[in-house]
Length: 87
Picture 1 (cartoon, rainbow, N blue to C red):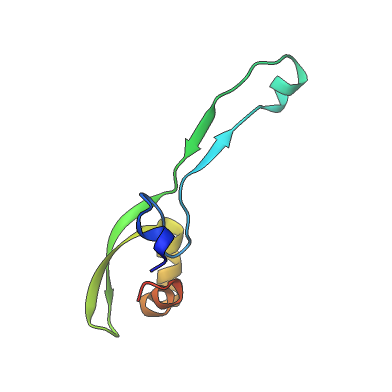
Picture 2: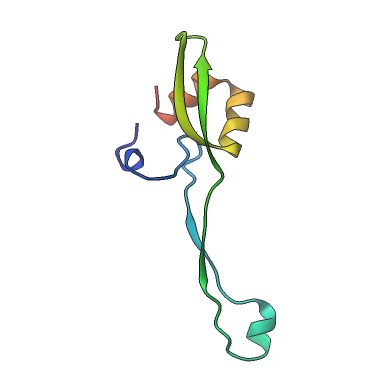
């Protein structure tokens, strides 16, 4: 597992998605007057899932994004988790 990802609160182990800062100005605000909007933290859709890996005959629990779940279903759990550095 990646050392910087180990202690991160909410991050996907497959896609490396985590939270990010967003917000700013709409084009209408830019066109009219200075009216600041606040920054917003957008969180990734992280799910806690138990995944069975038939090659190892084991079940592991991972924090994974919904896009990562789709990747697991498409490419297979063993291959995807091995490429991500979890196994």
